[in-house]
Length: 67
View 1 (cartoon, rainbow, N blue to C red):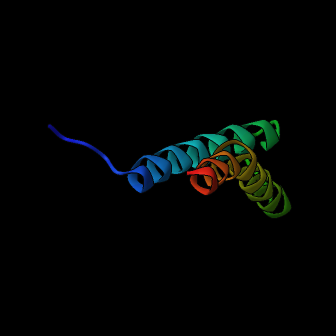
View 2: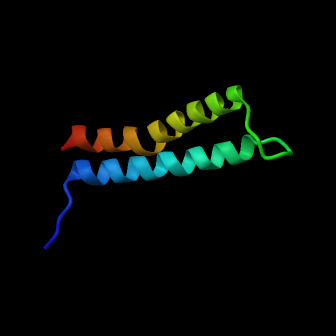
């Protein structure tokens, strides 16, 4: 039986969510030519961090604290 630890599950979920969110935000911020500017890249990274924090880190930390 192969069982993942709590930390492995949290890490996989957070990483998957982070990469997916970053791709989503960069695709939304591309111009008509399909290019993304430097400030838009920073904005995509900021939005990714907020998304990870709200959807992955905070809920898992709440669960961990209650255990």
